[in-house]
Image (cartoon, rainbow, N blue to C red):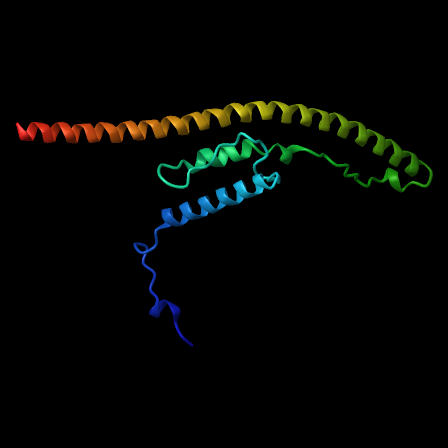
Length: 166
């Protein structure tokens, strides 16, 4: 049997994890754009104003992980009835009455819990919208800052070159 590790040693210096992650992020963004063009709503990105995640550079993974969580309101919707068997439900006549009371009580609680969840989702939509806009604004400002820094560097090099000629 051939030993794979002997023939193909893996050094951590040969693996560029950031480049691999950048490719994965870019592929995710491409798939998302394709799905949105086809009119599909991704369950992961519910809100339309979710900003594009950067695929390289100073990428704050934790920020986007948290932002993805805020953009997933469907995770808190849909409380279902889960009846529990009690000794009362095993009684011949009282058991049927108890099950009806239990079902009606559960339905009432589920109605109010789901109503509250709907209000929480509506509020979360507003919070997610604000956060999405702040992150988008931050992305624009980061790009402007990067361009300004490059321009300052070019101007300094030009000044240094002009001063060197004098």
